[in-house]
Length: 254
Image (cartoon, rainbow, N blue to C red; front, side, top):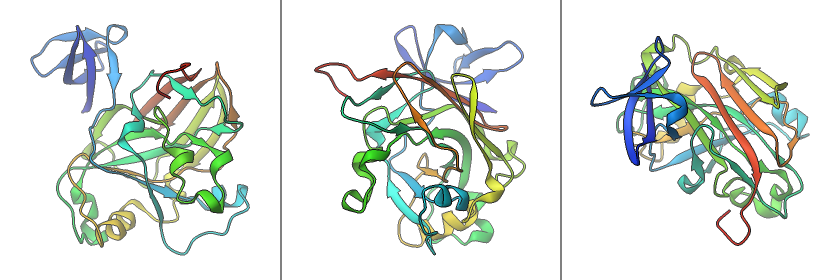
């Protein structure tokens, strides 16, 4: 099932996609046309854990050494937006880019989980775009809070796909288009640290709660985007996440 959170008629609703009718159905059985709702992130995590350089080809394109163990950062939940919501381009940024990723959503409390049973704590999967200002990623600014933590820099969605609906999370195509041009392509079979290994590593020192999200990393193919561009990130079988890039509001939150 593809689950969704969305705003319709002034109310936040939880529901699912009726693919046959191309409509969203809320928990009370009310149906809404897709163009009549505003998508929200499909989950409301307490914590979003990001992975840096979890594709070897991405590390290579940045001329960086591959870390021996998972390199983590925390993506602020204040950055999260839904499908079709605008990404705001900071006026001082010179190099803003997309990072399409498989996002793993935790389904139950997880602490000290062995990799062999790690998928048992997964609730489902969604698509993430770990938007980044490359200008701010230097040794001085690591961990990359300023580079990745701006409001609107965490598109997530459109749907939460149940774990059992994905046969193998380690064999999913990951792609990004900008204005319809394919710019990024990879597969989760290329992850340096697999989803089970990531869950084992992270839960070895911290507890993950239901709704928490792990961003598993992006393949090579990053490139700058500009105001007016439309970014579409896809994980095969999980969904297509589309967001326009707009100038940050003058005098307002960015």
